[in-house]
Image 1: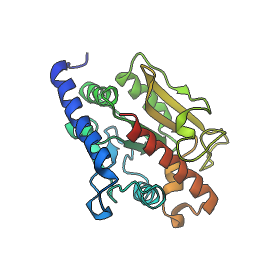
Image 2: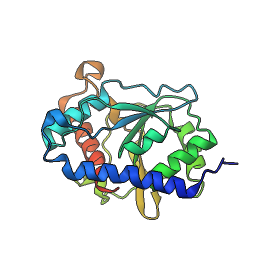
Image 3: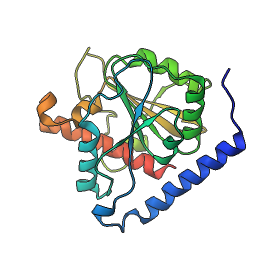
Image 4: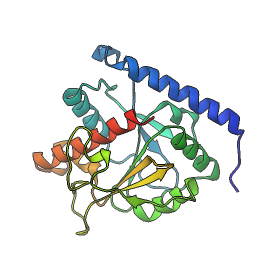
Length: 233
């Protein structure tokens, strides 16, 4: 059984925290770069999986979005735990890893409240995450299944065009890349980049030595996801 918390208090906390994010977004474009306050975060989870993988990925994605789209994001990502109230402070949460993931009942409830309250979770399979994350996300949304998003979905067309859907960045087992999503009342609350490994393409060029055109595809797809998250609170 999930340990239920006061639903009125939860809704109020979610509303006011997301209201602060909206206010930040409204004023963000007029702030000079050194005053950037809007941040994104990497999700820290239990179970033994390497949630901390791809250490240079988010800083490089942030730099790309700031220089290409003038998004004015704070240059370093934060780390936030699944069960923390601080999760409500971020419009976009990034999750990656190769191995086991475990959400407690209270963590699953906290993540559910975050997502239905306007938050966005990007799950990026670093090869090895899939068998675990599907089970754990069932704790968060027992009523939902991951579905493959059509190529016409806005995540593939907001700033950069991906007419064939999610790009393949890192080859592992010959399977095609799939952009999967959890849709809650018609809104995409979680995007799951499966068999693609966008994070590898975001990392420093010296780490994976991907061609520049491959890295650029990964960064552009990541930028689309950030823009989507910020515009769908």
